[in-house]
Amino acid sequence: QVHLVESGGGSVQAGGSLRLSCRVSGLNMRLSAMYWFRRAPGKQRELVASISSGGVTEYVDSVKGRFTISRDNVRTMVFLQMNNLNSEDRGVYYCHYQRAPSRWGQGTQVTVSS
Image 1 (cartoon, rainbow, N blue to C red):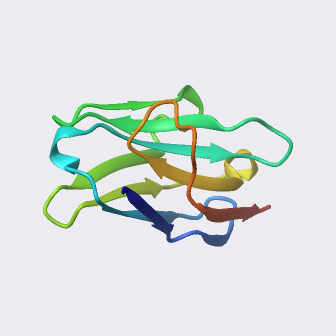
Image 2 (cartoon, rainbow, N blue to C red):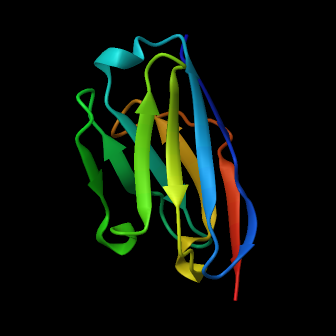
């Protein structure tokens, strides 16, 4: 059974930074793409960033140049470095190994105050 545990969220002022972490277990992470999603208040969950098994990254336009996804296959962890945060980045952030998950972990809350 795959377990995904997100952490690193918090409350920051606009312009601040956070680094989210996701600990992965029960999965051969080396063979899997990994994804970060977020669910903003009143909005549907959206895919924010992805990283392929080979390290190729993709981002939604709204975070390009500000967010960086990375992975550590040895430690079986995935990270999302978020810089220059703004109010649109608020929400609960989730990591996953599927692009269209049917089940979600608890996520980690990000709050950005202006």
